[in-house]
Amino acid sequence: MASPPGRVLLCGVQTALTLLPSPEEMYRAVVERDTGYDGVFVVAVTSTGIFCRPSCSARKPRRENTEFFATVRDAMFAGYRACRRCRPLEPAGAAPPWLRALLEDVGVNPAAPWRDEDLRLRGLDPTRVRRWFQHQYGMTFQAYRRGLRLGAALGQLRGGAAVTHAAHDSGYESLSGFAAALRQLVGRAPAASRDATPVMATRLLTPLGPMIAAATDAGLCLLEFSDRRMLGEQLRRVARFLPGPLTPGRHPLLDRTGDELQRYFDGTLEEFTVPLHTPGSEFQRQAWGALRRIPYGETRSYAQQAAAIGRPEAVRAVARANGDNRVAIVIPCHRVVGADGRLTGYGGGLWRKRWLLELERRRRAATTSPLRRVSVA
Image (spheres, rainbow, N blue to C red):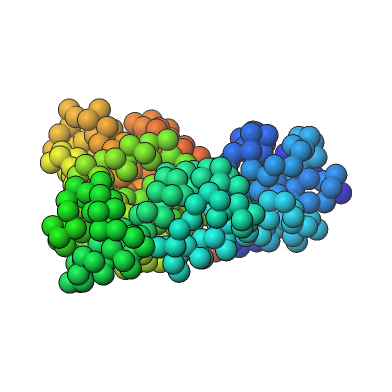
């Protein structure tokens, strides 16, 4: 029997711990093809028997023909099959199938030339490729590729390699071209760049959508949702505060961040241990330190946070410092609410703030009480 229009179905132990947005908000996301909700829920269409991501490009369903599920598992158990267009069985934020081969090849050999004509020969539209990288990384495909090449070159220089070897291995045909690229990225000539420490950046997939993470040897310096409007400004702040160039690549601290994030979302980690590198004013550092002292599963008001750092009159300044936080979730600014308990501004969106708080509250409650099945109409 068909469910009532816009009904939300939460089934089983796993989804009993998941809080979904309201049916009205989810249907809005489907109509507007909002990629920010991919991975948060799936929408099933009763008239076709298919379930999709919220951002699916298929024709929007009528409201009375929709059901919302917290997981693809629940949708499949309800008898729906996955859409072949948006592929909801794949992780949210994962590279689409048409792009995966290119990403693998670039990762193996970033020094290879990848001009627009090379992309077309592979059956790829350069504009489509550029837009995907711009949306997911905040940079074009060519900027991403240059970052990989120069990051590898900086690593070789720091390891003692000769400038000529570093230039050749990173795909530069001339030393002058290599020197010009390094000056643009680092502000120094190759020989003077041996002590330049790059800020390595990567994408991390989470149940709330992909995040951009960046780290130096000193610690994690950026963790933001890739669809946050202020992401570009946060990247510019990282570049302003840290002397090294921002380049895509791997780093042990990014791997550690990804592992801890996964355990956080699984409910098996309450306190992050990854070291942080978050330069800022003395006041900002005090405010961020106070955020990290808010216990898992609890909240504080802005006034309480201001009092905690000995500045009870600085409530507005505390709110600004929270907004300037560049390391979401790990520095838990989502745990600060209004004086009346209402949810207030959050860079990743209030729906994410609500989701994170509910995750923590329910996970904390689960340690002291048995889980129950939940169904929300």
